Image (cartoon, rainbow, N blue to C red; front, side, top):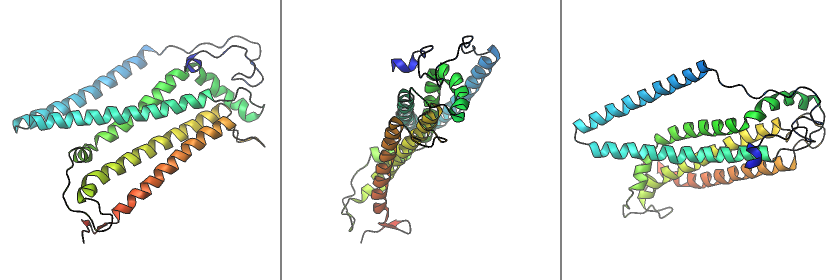
Length: 262
């Protein structure tokens, strides 16, 4: 990933400016964040952190007053585990695909009004691409992690599952599979589908910005590298969707909210 974080070579043929960079004054580097903006960010983080701490501490005191401190500890660490695991996985999937989309950008782009307009955005984004890569990945990771913490019930049910000793008459699976495992498998598939689809959309945006996708071109609207990456992501998404349909057939054993056992 060194070429992603390295600065763009000045005056290199076929660089980020079509036809090379014309002579003129060197572009200014990115400005440093203003103190007011940093102050607002720090205050916002402190407010959110205090709100989270107050809520967690209040719950801890309530559970402790009822004699269920161990239950609260297990609940808390389970949610932390889900946040780190699924938030990190989402950030990894998004970050790797954003890096690949930039790494596979075409070095030579045809002259066109579309590319001339996009060049303005490339001049702004390219110097701060490392910050954007990390920032976008972290933001999507946080959203995914927060969403995953709400699934602590089905995770604990799956993690502590036990067989009921009775199978259904259609698929001959123990009834515990429908109560404990099936909801968790549905969540895993839905999460992976969301992550892959998010990476697909963001990668398409990067390919378009750097000329891998050219909407106004008469021919070669999509470069070979962009087509390969987007096709691979779309193929993985279809495989996950197919597995989701395969899981849906087990839901047919339920009728009117009850499990059909005979």
